[in-house]
Amino acid sequence: MRISQRGLYALQALTVLARQHPAGVVKIKDIATEENLPEKFLENILLDLKRARIVASIRGAHGGYQLNRAPAEIFLGDVIRRIDGPLAPFEDADSLRRRVDKDAKHRPLFQVLLDVRNAAAGILDHTSIADLCCSRN
Image (tube, rainbow, N blue to C red; front, side, top):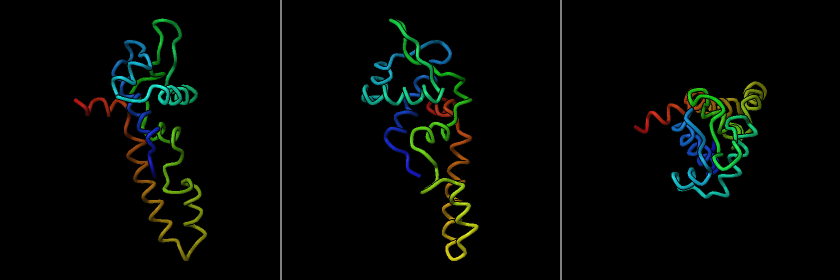
């Protein structure tokens, strides 16, 4: 599993939005400034998160972005999968399971890779954006 710079930026942006939830919206410029992120790159990331219904955008002079649901309901695994793809070192979990079942010669190797994927998924799928915000204090 590899989390890209894009994935890290998405998580950083979501923590900013979580700290403002449910009080209001945050402008892209303010997120970029607070987290020292490139604004243009951040725009594309927020559009992806909007398509995934993780965030919502509000138009107008007082517009910006806000979380679509409570920070405790947004899990890192969902965000990373949306931005970076599967959590497995290569392929996805189903493909790894098939390799474990069908390739007796390399079963131990594929089982280790599946175990790594499952351990990472277990942590990321049970850690919410709210957990990140609380642990910063």
